Length: 313
Image (cartoon, rainbow, N blue to C red):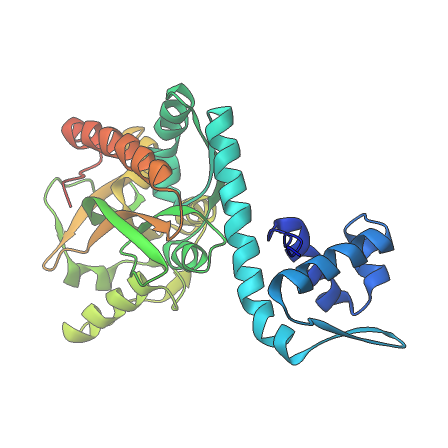
């Protein structure tokens, strides 16, 4: 006599197993999944039959994962995550639209995101973004652990959890109120920072550590430094406290053009940073390629324009 066909593995069956393991009760698992208890029990039984293993031991207070279930729950979570990503991708392909959670530094937010949002909306099919502004180290960490799909950040390190493409390089500038910093066209030697009041990122940031390392190597003592990170706070403090900042030229381009701030490139040595697109492993290749193509075109125009001092990375 032929054996009845076994139930196919599906998200519905796997979700019941995860909910039962987390809740320790078939009743609570069914309620969480908006199912009747008999329906949840039937799905759990079908999964056990499909795997040929008993996943839960029944006791007076509910369910307890078996030894086999403890070994399988990790792979089940991974399978659920992969199937859910597949469903989201299929839905995006069917709807002709992709959504990407994208982080960006303040400079990238001002200089890249407006053009990227417009280009993504006009692309066929469209590319939409859920945006978050942050600092490079934080954004890179969020891409690595999957909280962000992609990020625009400076000098990110990569590991097995992320892919990377360099977009442009730029030298940092000393930017401050015109009353403090003269607008001489020539670069300012790094040693001269010792005579100016500075606003810098927090000591845990890599660029701050690099500045302090260079100061020690050149045997100079930086003046009393005030920590400030958000650009709006930096701008207000620089004007109110008559302090200078070490920042990308493009971050305060409008203020410099209006004469509110002056700017001089730092030299001997230059402080160079590279902007990169970072993306999480597993982001669909079609999304990555579209994002890379849009950004390459935007950056190429900005490099050709020469307004921000960007150059190929």
